[in-house]
Image (tube, helix red, strand yellow):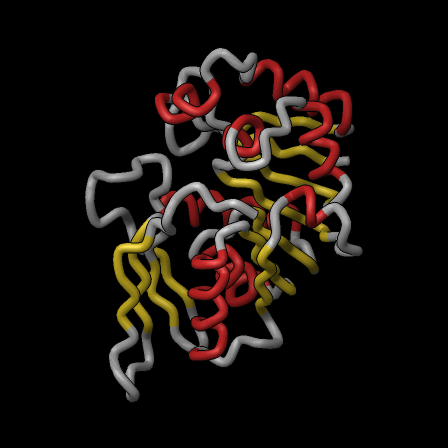
Amino acid sequence: MDVLELADIDSIQFGGHDGLVTEVRGYQNYNISNSWVDPVGNPTKKRPWADTQIKSNDFDRFMEKIQPDTYADFGSNLGYYVFRAAFEHGAHATGIDYSAEYINVSNLLVARHRLRSDCTFMHSNLQQLNSVDKYYDFMTVFNVIHHLYNRTEKYMDMDRLLQDFANKADSILFEVPTEKDQKGHKWTMDTGYKEALFVESAQKIFSSVKHYPGQTEHRPYYLCIK
């Protein structure tokens, strides 16, 4: 797997050999101990579409609605939603990311805070995941659809892309940067990528496709259920 950028990590503060809380700062911001994980709002104006505090509130509402026994976060980044699913919602939680940096940091947090039975992390991309015998009640796919379409895995076929996700979970919450999103447009300009294309493909594959407001106007959620 060719990783196209370094992991977006600002700092990991362990607090020494007697530190009970690890402070994680970067694309995701949170504090974690052996028994809890708490989101932290964006400490700067960077990444307005990825405020962990705001998105965590959204995540909790969807988890309460679906109440999955097994959960996976595709594009798990620094692992926050995996830890949240295990601590707050009692799910067997898995994080999946194509960046070894993110997976290694997440596994280090698992080891430090003794979470081996609750949280696991897998170094994989979507096409490799489809060759593995894994299936989940619920999956989140936050802000990676546009990258998979035309950057990291270059699907360039929305039907095939969404079908590969549908092969892995009963219910999937997608966060979809639209063609009007500045970064979404940057990576997909002149490719045919559009929100309408996502919706059209999703409606072919899933029995229910529901739109929900996202953190920003041009990054809505779609809850898709088979």
